[in-house]
Image (cartoon, rainbow, N blue to C red; front, side):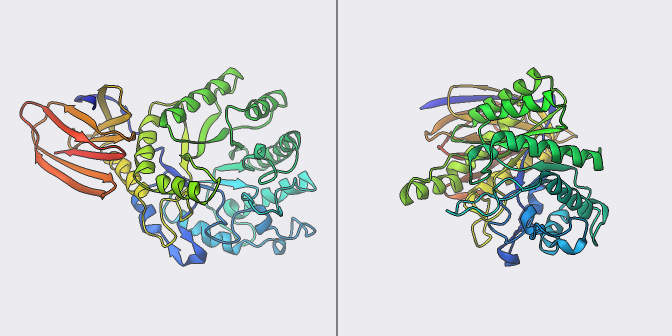
Length: 428
């Protein structure tokens, strides 16, 4: 059995907990039949990115759903269908996260593609986007003053016709026209892209190089990764930051705005196994390990895919929380003890850990994820006097208490931690 030793020093504050637990999509699903707003409120989400919202909720957010008839006048409010998106955004705004609004369209897995071709007129498409900004930020067309700062141009154009049937050069041209139009309208907007599916592939470098060469507006660089190893997420965070800095884009934010556990589509059996893993203890322990590793990564924002009721979501189609929701709840507990303290780790097991204290020095939270399959002999060492409580997310527990005792007088607690398990250890 592998052994892991954690040495926590509550007196040594090393930084702050960073809220990098944003999600994709809002709490309303299935035309309003399912509303997980109360659960979203408990997560205290820092960011909500809007992409593929149409999967659990019809006809919202996407440019073709808001401006359905390309022949209409872009300056006429009657050309726009805002109401469904107004209602969808209202549920998000009520919970106060920052919105990352993806301008473009949702992914299309259907044999026939409806909205993934390049717009016939890039300047008109950009003008439509400006009017969407005006509606949600400036009150245009009986609109709102939501103060949405982040506007992302398209999604994963390099994956082919499911998202973009044009060339990469055409996408870069669309980005150039739209980004310049948005910044010309309101220089305070944060404009970015390209929501790259493969950050290590040639596309992201090509896009960023074009931004430098053409002096294109770029406030944030967005990218995606699905993997079974949280360390790969951390490695890609460093790769993207090095890529940006190497091109002189040191002030550009790095946003990992789609991430989740690896999955496969080959057939029904592999699909079932993938999503059972993603939604269960495997995905839960992976999510917590990733959120812990993000803390030391050169990463500005992260949004999990997804916070709704899709296959990838934190909730099932009926709105009931999955194991991954409870994993996020465990991480959010760290926000109550926001001062990071020294937590040294020894051992080779697939274990990630983090510790934090409240401003007054108590309580102390230690969050541990064994994201590997094997049981680990865990030893936790720290100087403390008081009570210890352990809550677990695993196959049998949904952030439920599994142990309560006085903290050992010798300052060391040891236990066997099963694979794919999250422990939130609270000391008071």
